Amino acid sequence: MNANHDERMSGAVDQEAFEKVIHDNLSPAGVATIIAFLQAATSYQAPTPEAEQGLRELEWFANTLIDLLGVEQYNRLLDEIGL
Image 1 (cartoon, rainbow, N blue to C red):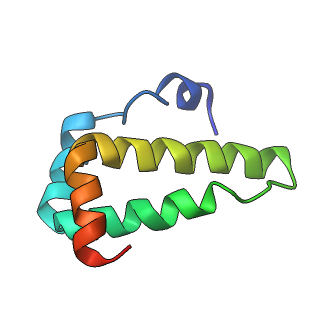
Image 2 (cartoon, helix red, strand yellow):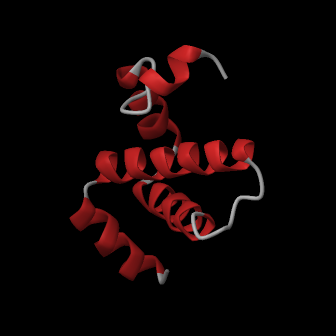
């Protein structure tokens, strides 16, 4: 990864485009399902520094998706889809 990667951990390079792609291609239930499975992976013990970096990126992605849905909608969707 390049130096710019660490700088953008608070947002996508083009946040507006990122959000549009998510909204245009995934249902809210699909996003909630992705988040649930990503969050399960965060309990994985990384064996290498590279894996640790990958897990930090995974956590950023899950948190970014939660921000798109909103916590209340995410929790409601988890109940609705049984996760």
